[in-house]
Amino acid sequence: LGDLLLQVVFLAQVARERGQFSIREVVETIRDKIVRRHPHVFGSQRMETAEEVLHQWERIKSRERQAAGTFLLQGTPVSLPALLKAWRLAAKAARVGFDWKSAAGALEKVEEELGELREAASGAGGAEPIRHEIGDLLFAVANLARHLRVDAESALQEANRRFTERFTHMEQALRRAGRQFEELGPAELDALWEAAKGAAGIPGAPGDPPAEGQK
Image (cartoon, rainbow, N blue to C red; front, top):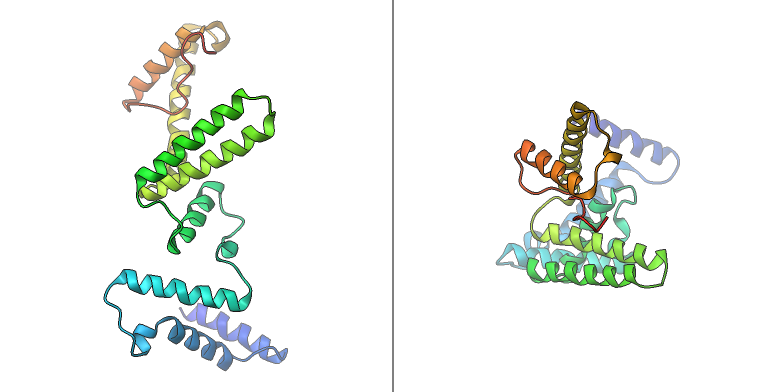
């Protein structure tokens, strides 16, 4: 905390010497913001529930954004991984009421986007509509994960790990048999994948190979 305070004081001093602002202005600004955003604490207003406090917070923030000419989603860091950013964007929109009422609605949206992807993939529109629909589907899945209180980014990392472990198990089995992936047909690949899943002891897996005849 002392190191952090040193940085604040140091930067405020640099700004004062440049004629920009002083440490007093920094303190007054944060004090005014805290008071402005918590009228139920520093004023006569009373709130009965935490939900009321959050709704009031968003109304106040909305007025601040309007006065500053900024928008709700602008502050989302552009450097975030895509799945985490999708989660953040949907969560911010949800705070002002733009959200599904339950996970069931979010799941229906996933199914809707999957149907649109099927249409795009079977159409003659080329790669761009498919790319568009895949993006929409991934966003919908990230939003569903938020409703189910699952970290989509870590869930995908875990799926990547499971796929890597199981595929490596397949590769090891083939080496022991003196064979190559290219020698196997769809049915043999499927059987080898199922064996790898059983060896891992975890039901289900990402990246299940297509059924025979669908490759």
